[in-house]
Length: 395
Image (cartoon, rainbow, N blue to C red; front, side, top):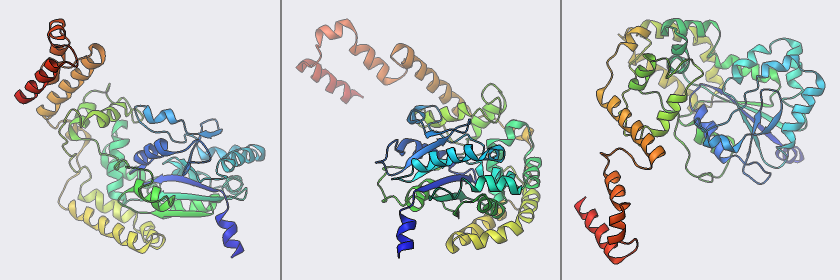
């Protein structure tokens, strides 16, 4: 009993180490918006900066284009740190977790864990993860590799000029997506617990099941990351200014914010990996997945296997789509028309205070602000109220 009480009273440090690249950005947005910068919040969202220093994740990041903050520090650099620097970082993290759980997030940390394979490097990492009387936890979200590779390709590989099948094979050779292997590496780093999870909603699961916050206590949560629409993808493929490289998703973030307001159509990207490549992927990951089934909760393992089978069956008889074939697909005229109208309307409102002249509210605003109208219908007068009602009826 005393041991249980002691464990529960320990500072709790939670590392979201990503894994599936699905839901990571959505989770980081919620963590940025809801994380506390004081001891009184439900959790404290920290940032491990590139220079190795520790601080609170900047609240201002919620208002940035991406809408989130994460920890850019590369944990593989720990292999070169001296004991004093490691102790300073560990103390900085634990001190901020003294009264409320501390959370750090970087979806690439699970891959970097494999780079700390040398005994001396593992020993250095263990002097952080699992030290200072704190409970250090790593949380790894996974996804069946075939679907994950296709999604990952659209985020990164396609912007490096790779073909889908070449990208998938290179990822296999680099052991990317070997989830059970990553669990072993995270344990070797010194984490007290490594939680590997397969869930439909990463944000909901992390906030309410990992952090154990009262359900509904953090308000409405954002939905999972949206996949890029086909027409935006085609525009970016045919104009490198819109997406010059894999690390410049600015236009995607902008459309994600404004696409609904502009009523942009959403066409899905067609299947990219064909049956032959999918079969290769399943074979390459079969041994790792067999071990993964023993690490997941039974109901999650069952869902993982079921979804993997369904994805494989959906690609029977399909061929792999090349990058050139994808870029050559025709654009939807409705999409480009609404995109241009929405963007021009936005610029007119920002610079001149009114939108496109074709918009209903443009003419009502222009009329309301006309000097003659303001004299005949003074703001707040009975005549102005009557005129407003009459206009509303006409609309």
